[in-house]
Length: 76
Image (cartoon, rainbow, N blue to C red; front, side, top):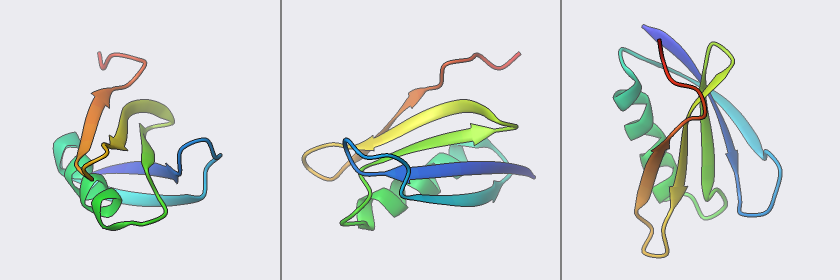
């Protein structure tokens, strides 16, 4: 199990909330973040960190569907 740190924000704001997610793999953590963003009226973006390194950016589209993009540093 891996511990991921998730920093939620609205567009144009700083971090509004930080949560920890424990998951077997990154895709499971991303799915949980997508569900949270899709259900939230406040949060529109999230940054997912593993061991202090940015792994994914997740944001909501106009239709409310969350999409994920790769982080800034590749996993070795």
